[in-house]
Length: 327
Image (tube, one colour):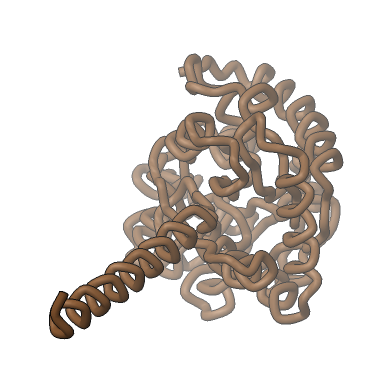
Protein backbone atom coordinates (compact mmCIF):
# COMPACT_ATOMS: atom_id res chain seq x y z
CA UNK A 1 0.00 0.00 0.00
CA UNK A 2 1.41 3.34 -0.95
CA UNK A 3 2.16 6.05 1.58
CA UNK A 4 -0.41 8.27 -0.07
CA UNK A 5 -3.13 5.62 0.22
CA UNK A 6 -2.33 4.92 3.89
CA UNK A 7 -2.50 8.66 4.64
CA UNK A 8 -5.79 8.96 2.78
CA UNK A 9 -7.35 6.03 4.66
CA UNK A 10 -6.12 7.40 8.00
CA UNK A 11 -7.63 10.81 7.32
CA UNK A 12 -10.89 9.20 6.18
CA UNK A 13 -11.08 7.05 9.32
CA UNK A 14 -10.44 10.04 11.57
CA UNK A 15 -13.11 12.04 9.75
CA UNK A 16 -15.62 9.20 10.10
CA UNK A 17 -14.86 8.85 13.81
CA UNK A 18 -15.25 12.60 14.28
CA UNK A 19 -18.57 12.62 12.48
CA UNK A 20 -19.71 9.66 14.54
CA UNK A 21 -18.76 11.44 17.74
CA UNK A 22 -20.67 14.55 16.71
CA UNK A 23 -23.70 12.45 15.81
CA UNK A 24 -23.52 10.64 19.15
CA UNK A 25 -23.36 13.94 21.03
CA UNK A 26 -26.30 15.28 19.05
CA UNK A 27 -28.30 12.11 19.75
CA UNK A 28 -27.47 12.24 23.45
CA UNK A 29 -28.53 15.86 23.66
CA UNK A 30 -31.79 15.11 21.85
CA UNK A 31 -32.46 12.25 24.24
CA UNK A 32 -31.85 14.32 27.35
CA UNK A 33 -33.73 17.44 26.26
CA UNK A 34 -36.78 17.94 28.46
CA UNK A 35 -39.88 19.33 26.78
CA UNK A 36 -42.07 21.53 28.98
CA UNK A 37 -45.44 21.83 27.29
CA UNK A 38 -47.81 24.77 27.80
CA UNK A 39 -51.43 24.54 26.69
CA UNK A 40 -51.78 28.21 25.76
CA UNK A 41 -50.25 30.55 23.16
CA UNK A 42 -46.98 32.38 23.59
CA UNK A 43 -47.37 35.78 25.18
CA UNK A 44 -49.80 34.77 27.93
CA UNK A 45 -49.19 34.49 31.65
CA UNK A 46 -48.70 30.71 31.69
CA UNK A 47 -46.19 30.90 28.87
CA UNK A 48 -44.18 33.57 30.70
CA UNK A 49 -44.16 31.47 33.88
CA UNK A 50 -42.99 28.39 31.97
CA UNK A 51 -40.09 30.29 30.41
CA UNK A 52 -38.93 31.63 33.78
CA UNK A 53 -38.93 28.11 35.24
CA UNK A 54 -37.46 26.42 32.18
CA UNK A 55 -34.36 28.59 32.28
CA UNK A 56 -33.64 27.67 35.88
CA UNK A 57 -34.64 24.00 35.52
CA UNK A 58 -32.14 23.69 32.69
CA UNK A 59 -29.40 24.79 35.05
CA UNK A 60 -30.58 22.44 37.80
CA UNK A 61 -30.92 19.41 35.51
CA UNK A 62 -27.78 20.11 33.51
CA UNK A 63 -29.63 19.44 30.27
CA UNK A 64 -31.75 21.48 27.83
CA UNK A 65 -35.31 22.35 28.84
CA UNK A 66 -37.45 23.79 26.05
CA UNK A 67 -40.93 25.29 26.25
CA UNK A 68 -43.40 24.03 23.65
CA UNK A 69 -46.66 25.94 23.17
CA UNK A 70 -49.32 23.39 22.26
CA UNK A 71 -52.29 25.74 22.36
CA UNK A 72 -55.90 24.82 21.81
CA UNK A 73 -59.11 23.88 23.63
CA UNK A 74 -58.02 25.48 26.91
CA UNK A 75 -55.00 23.22 27.32
CA UNK A 76 -56.84 20.06 26.27
CA UNK A 77 -54.54 19.40 23.30
CA UNK A 78 -51.44 19.65 25.47
CA UNK A 79 -52.98 17.33 28.05
CA UNK A 80 -53.79 14.78 25.36
CA UNK A 81 -50.21 15.05 24.07
CA UNK A 82 -48.90 14.40 27.57
CA UNK A 83 -51.01 11.25 27.86
CA UNK A 84 -49.53 9.98 24.58
CA UNK A 85 -45.92 10.84 25.49
CA UNK A 86 -43.34 8.30 26.57
CA UNK A 87 -43.11 8.11 30.39
CA UNK A 88 -39.38 8.77 30.42
CA UNK A 89 -39.30 12.01 32.41
CA UNK A 90 -38.47 14.14 29.37
CA UNK A 91 -41.98 15.30 28.46
CA UNK A 92 -43.74 17.46 31.03
CA UNK A 93 -46.83 19.65 31.18
CA UNK A 94 -46.85 22.92 33.10
CA UNK A 95 -50.48 23.69 33.85
CA UNK A 96 -52.86 25.42 36.18
CA UNK A 97 -56.16 24.04 37.43
CA UNK A 98 -58.13 24.44 34.22
CA UNK A 99 -56.60 21.64 32.14
CA UNK A 100 -56.06 19.25 35.02
CA UNK A 101 -59.18 19.73 37.17
CA UNK A 102 -61.86 21.76 35.41
CA UNK A 103 -61.77 20.51 31.80
CA UNK A 104 -62.50 16.88 32.68
CA UNK A 105 -65.61 18.06 34.57
CA UNK A 106 -67.00 20.29 31.80
CA UNK A 107 -66.10 18.22 28.74
CA UNK A 108 -67.88 15.02 27.74
CA UNK A 109 -64.84 13.41 26.14
CA UNK A 110 -61.68 15.29 27.11
CA UNK A 111 -59.47 12.46 25.90
CA UNK A 112 -57.77 11.91 29.24
CA UNK A 113 -58.39 11.22 32.94
CA UNK A 114 -56.02 13.27 35.06
CA UNK A 115 -55.84 10.87 38.01
CA UNK A 116 -55.26 7.90 35.71
CA UNK A 117 -53.15 9.34 32.89
CA UNK A 118 -50.90 11.84 34.71
CA UNK A 119 -48.62 11.86 37.71
CA UNK A 120 -47.95 15.13 39.56
CA UNK A 121 -44.31 16.14 39.59
CA UNK A 122 -44.49 19.21 41.83
CA UNK A 123 -46.61 22.25 42.55
CA UNK A 124 -44.89 25.59 42.71
CA UNK A 125 -47.51 28.31 43.25
CA UNK A 126 -51.09 29.34 43.79
CA UNK A 127 -52.77 32.34 42.20
CA UNK A 128 -56.12 34.06 41.90
CA UNK A 129 -58.48 34.92 39.09
CA UNK A 130 -59.70 38.48 38.80
CA UNK A 131 -62.04 40.83 36.98
CA UNK A 132 -60.42 43.62 34.98
CA UNK A 133 -61.94 46.43 32.94
CA UNK A 134 -60.48 47.84 29.73
CA UNK A 135 -58.68 51.14 29.77
CA UNK A 136 -61.34 52.65 27.52
CA UNK A 137 -64.06 52.29 30.14
CA UNK A 138 -64.67 55.22 32.49
CA UNK A 139 -65.11 53.06 35.62
CA UNK A 140 -62.51 52.73 38.36
CA UNK A 141 -63.92 49.99 40.61
CA UNK A 142 -66.03 46.84 40.68
CA UNK A 143 -69.28 48.42 41.87
CA UNK A 144 -68.86 51.27 39.38
CA UNK A 145 -68.39 48.65 36.65
CA UNK A 146 -71.63 46.89 37.63
CA UNK A 147 -73.54 50.19 37.57
CA UNK A 148 -71.97 51.14 34.23
CA UNK A 149 -72.96 47.84 32.59
CA UNK A 150 -76.49 48.20 33.96
CA UNK A 151 -76.76 51.63 32.34
CA UNK A 152 -74.97 50.80 29.07
CA UNK A 153 -76.10 47.25 28.30
CA UNK A 154 -75.59 45.83 24.83
CA UNK A 155 -72.01 45.06 23.84
CA UNK A 156 -70.75 46.55 27.09
CA UNK A 157 -72.06 43.44 28.85
CA UNK A 158 -69.55 41.17 27.05
CA UNK A 159 -66.85 39.75 29.32
CA UNK A 160 -63.84 37.96 27.87
CA UNK A 161 -62.67 34.64 29.30
CA UNK A 162 -59.56 32.62 28.27
CA UNK A 163 -61.49 29.39 27.58
CA UNK A 164 -65.04 28.03 27.59
CA UNK A 165 -66.16 26.01 30.60
CA UNK A 166 -63.46 27.61 32.74
CA UNK A 167 -63.43 29.08 36.24
CA UNK A 168 -63.65 32.59 34.70
CA UNK A 169 -66.88 31.55 32.94
CA UNK A 170 -68.46 30.49 36.24
CA UNK A 171 -67.28 33.72 37.83
CA UNK A 172 -69.05 35.68 35.08
CA UNK A 173 -72.24 33.67 35.69
CA UNK A 174 -72.13 34.31 39.43
CA UNK A 175 -71.49 38.04 38.97
CA UNK A 176 -74.42 38.23 36.56
CA UNK A 177 -76.73 36.31 38.91
CA UNK A 178 -75.71 38.30 41.96
CA UNK A 179 -76.30 41.66 40.26
CA UNK A 180 -79.24 40.83 38.00
CA UNK A 181 -77.23 41.42 34.83
CA UNK A 182 -77.28 39.70 31.45
CA UNK A 183 -73.52 39.31 31.10
CA UNK A 184 -72.17 37.39 28.11
CA UNK A 185 -69.00 35.33 28.61
CA UNK A 186 -66.97 35.45 25.38
CA UNK A 187 -64.45 32.57 25.22
CA UNK A 188 -61.03 33.04 23.61
CA UNK A 189 -58.23 30.63 22.74
CA UNK A 190 -56.13 31.67 25.71
CA UNK A 191 -55.52 34.89 27.59
CA UNK A 192 -53.19 36.49 25.01
CA UNK A 193 -55.87 37.11 22.32
CA UNK A 194 -58.35 38.14 25.03
CA UNK A 195 -55.85 40.68 26.35
CA UNK A 196 -55.33 42.03 22.83
CA UNK A 197 -59.06 42.77 22.53
CA UNK A 198 -59.17 44.33 25.99
CA UNK A 199 -56.23 46.59 25.23
CA UNK A 200 -57.85 47.51 21.93
CA UNK A 201 -61.11 48.29 23.76
CA UNK A 202 -62.96 45.67 21.73
CA UNK A 203 -64.43 44.25 24.93
CA UNK A 204 -65.15 46.14 28.11
CA UNK A 205 -63.99 43.58 30.65
CA UNK A 206 -62.32 40.22 31.13
CA UNK A 207 -61.85 37.55 33.76
CA UNK A 208 -58.48 35.76 33.92
CA UNK A 209 -55.58 35.14 36.27
CA UNK A 210 -53.56 37.86 37.97
CA UNK A 211 -50.43 36.89 35.98
CA UNK A 212 -52.37 37.66 32.79
CA UNK A 213 -53.41 41.12 34.00
CA UNK A 214 -50.72 42.41 36.31
CA UNK A 215 -48.31 44.01 33.82
CA UNK A 216 -51.01 46.03 32.06
CA UNK A 217 -52.71 46.84 35.37
CA UNK A 218 -49.50 48.38 36.68
CA UNK A 219 -49.04 50.25 33.40
CA UNK A 220 -52.56 51.71 33.68
CA UNK A 221 -53.71 50.10 30.42
CA UNK A 222 -56.48 48.24 32.21
CA UNK A 223 -57.78 48.08 35.77
CA UNK A 224 -58.19 45.01 37.96
CA UNK A 225 -61.25 45.65 40.12
CA UNK A 226 -61.78 42.42 42.11
CA UNK A 227 -59.83 39.26 42.99
CA UNK A 228 -60.56 35.77 44.30
CA UNK A 229 -59.23 34.41 47.58
CA UNK A 230 -59.48 35.12 51.27
CA UNK A 231 -57.14 38.10 51.27
CA UNK A 232 -55.97 40.89 49.02
CA UNK A 233 -52.99 40.24 46.81
CA UNK A 234 -49.57 41.60 47.74
CA UNK A 235 -48.96 42.59 44.12
CA UNK A 236 -52.07 44.82 44.10
CA UNK A 237 -53.19 45.48 47.68
CA UNK A 238 -55.61 48.22 46.58
CA UNK A 239 -57.91 45.68 44.88
CA UNK A 240 -60.68 44.13 47.06
CA UNK A 241 -61.62 40.44 47.15
CA UNK A 242 -64.96 39.15 45.87
CA UNK A 243 -65.88 38.28 49.45
CA UNK A 244 -65.36 41.91 50.48
CA UNK A 245 -67.69 42.90 47.66
CA UNK A 246 -70.42 40.46 48.74
CA UNK A 247 -69.71 37.61 46.31
CA UNK A 248 -68.90 34.58 48.47
CA UNK A 249 -67.92 31.08 47.34
CA UNK A 250 -64.72 31.88 45.47
CA UNK A 251 -62.20 31.56 48.27
CA UNK A 252 -60.56 28.34 47.02
CA UNK A 253 -57.71 29.54 44.83
CA UNK A 254 -56.18 27.73 41.82
CA UNK A 255 -52.76 26.15 41.65
CA UNK A 256 -49.87 25.81 39.22
CA UNK A 257 -48.04 22.52 38.85
CA UNK A 258 -45.95 20.33 36.58
CA UNK A 259 -47.19 16.92 35.47
CA UNK A 260 -45.70 13.88 33.72
CA UNK A 261 -47.27 10.92 31.90
CA UNK A 262 -48.49 8.07 34.08
CA UNK A 263 -45.85 5.39 34.45
CA UNK A 264 -42.95 7.82 34.73
CA UNK A 265 -40.46 6.21 37.14
CA UNK A 266 -40.50 7.53 40.69
CA UNK A 267 -36.78 8.25 40.48
CA UNK A 268 -37.41 10.60 37.56
CA UNK A 269 -40.31 12.28 39.40
CA UNK A 270 -38.18 12.76 42.50
CA UNK A 271 -35.31 14.22 40.47
CA UNK A 272 -37.59 16.63 38.63
CA UNK A 273 -39.41 17.59 41.84
CA UNK A 274 -36.13 18.38 43.57
CA UNK A 275 -35.11 20.54 40.60
CA UNK A 276 -38.41 22.47 40.82
CA UNK A 277 -37.95 22.97 44.56
CA UNK A 278 -34.44 24.35 44.08
CA UNK A 279 -35.52 26.52 41.14
CA UNK A 280 -38.32 28.34 42.95
CA UNK A 281 -36.10 28.86 46.00
CA UNK A 282 -33.73 30.97 43.91
CA UNK A 283 -34.40 34.66 44.69
CA UNK A 284 -34.37 35.71 41.03
CA UNK A 285 -37.01 33.08 40.17
CA UNK A 286 -39.17 33.62 43.24
CA UNK A 287 -39.08 37.40 42.80
CA UNK A 288 -40.11 37.18 39.14
CA UNK A 289 -43.00 34.83 39.88
CA UNK A 290 -44.15 36.89 42.86
CA UNK A 291 -44.08 40.05 40.75
CA UNK A 292 -46.43 38.29 38.34
CA UNK A 293 -48.99 37.83 41.10
CA UNK A 294 -48.19 34.26 42.15
CA UNK A 295 -47.91 33.04 45.72
CA UNK A 296 -44.83 30.87 45.40
CA UNK A 297 -44.62 27.68 47.44
CA UNK A 298 -43.39 24.16 46.81
CA UNK A 299 -45.75 21.18 46.83
CA UNK A 300 -44.39 17.65 46.53
CA UNK A 301 -45.97 15.16 44.15
CA UNK A 302 -48.17 13.84 46.95
CA UNK A 303 -49.11 17.31 48.19
CA UNK A 304 -50.04 18.48 44.69
CA UNK A 305 -52.21 15.40 44.19
CA UNK A 306 -54.02 16.12 47.48
CA UNK A 307 -54.46 19.78 46.55
CA UNK A 308 -55.96 18.81 43.18
CA UNK A 309 -58.46 16.43 44.84
CA UNK A 310 -59.60 19.11 47.30
CA UNK A 311 -59.91 21.70 44.55
CA UNK A 312 -61.90 19.30 42.36
CA UNK A 313 -64.36 18.66 45.19
CA UNK A 314 -65.10 22.38 45.61
CA UNK A 315 -65.49 23.08 41.90
CA UNK A 316 -67.56 19.98 41.18
CA UNK A 317 -70.25 21.46 43.42
CA UNK A 318 -70.01 24.95 41.90
CA UNK A 319 -70.27 23.54 38.38
CA UNK A 320 -73.20 21.30 39.29
CA UNK A 321 -75.07 24.13 41.04
CA UNK A 322 -74.55 26.39 38.02
CA UNK A 323 -76.52 24.00 35.82
CA UNK A 324 -73.66 23.78 33.33
CA UNK A 325 -73.92 20.79 30.99
CA UNK A 326 -70.70 19.17 29.78
CA UNK A 327 -70.10 20.03 26.14
